[in-house]
Length: 92
Image 1 (tube, rainbow, N blue to C red):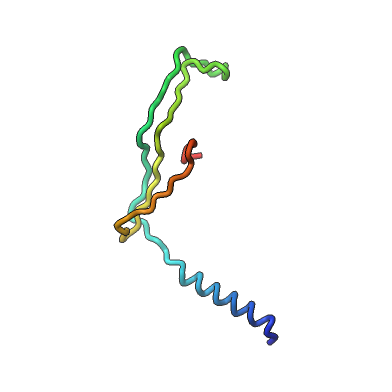
Image 2: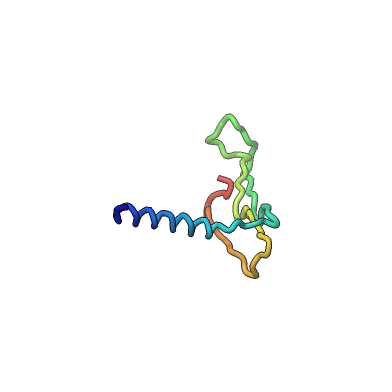
C-alpha cells in the first residue's frame, strides 16, 4: 500500500480506538431541579391582557436562580458548578 494512504488510515484508526477507550459512561445516582431566591414585584392597577402596552397589574419576577443538578455514583468531594444564562432563564 502507498504511504500516503496508510498514514491517514492508521491515524484514523488510532483516534477511533482512543475515543472509544475514553468514553466511560457516567452513571447518575440522583438528579433534579429547584428554584432559589427571588422576588416578585407587582405594579399598581388591574391587568388587561388585551392591552400589551399597559403594564398595570403585571408582575416582574427576578433575583432568582433555576438550578439543575446531577449527582453521579461515587461523586468526588468537590463538585463542578457551571453558571450561565445571566439575565435570562435557564429554561429558555
